[in-house]
Image (cartoon, rainbow, N blue to C red):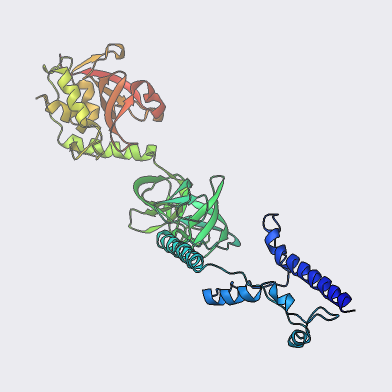
Length: 436
């Protein structure tokens, strides 16, 4: 009987030893086979392995030897009663993995080094990085209105930033159609393009470009108004051919100053730069009257040349007067009329000729138009359409079909093509040669 019990206990001990061997060997065997530890989805933290001292490892090692099963009081459940009483339901036996102290220190050092490197890199990036520019998109309210450019020349850009490309340059006084506006920018249409301009350089009031120009009224009667619109108060009325000074040019309107000193606005289409025929006739009559008082005696031999002179020098002197303003009765570089100019040119080479244009038929020698040469004087009827023939204008031929003269239309000494005189209503009457 005792023999059977002994065999039975030995068999149980062997079986317990085998089970424990499998339990102990399983973690070791799993590493070479590439097995991984199964971690449940509910695990949120990985506990740091417990680092034990050498004495604690020695005690644990001695307690985990196979001698423990031999000391067990094996019953039907395979555990002694004392051990089963110590373990309560829900207890879990934890297996800790020993880590070498030096390795742990090395791991912590490496982690600290990496952490320091990341912090250092972040610091460098923070110092070198430029602050990000935040572009606030402007909101354009839809509008429909017309404005005028008040700047001398305004850039119209591709979008509403000062760095955007310029797609058009809008001159001062030009009108633009506005279809959108923000606090600082306007979206406009101009010259068939849509772009953006700075709002402060556009105004609802018409802008006038400053000028100073002589103009004549080209209408039977013209109202001068207090504002540039057809409903404004009428300040005065002008008659046809009245001369005014234009001091500003706007959108279809001109700011003028009358001979009486009144400033106001007139429609630009009723002004012309061309000197009217009536004004030319009045200027000629005034010139003739002033010249007759100081007219020298005509040459005793009107059919002969007056003297000798260098023709090239005469032409050079004539060119030196170009651009001098037209002044009725003028005979100096501060201002010329037609005969005042020709007589001034010849005085520079020591030859005196009459100061009035109608006396030129008795000066020098007449030559044909086909025989004309530089230095010759062309005597003309400046108002040939009135049915009368009289010398009322003179000029100096300078070659290549060009004549220099005191132009009424251009209000200065200017060149005119001789072949185009008829288009201005002027008819050559005689060509006078003054020198050999």
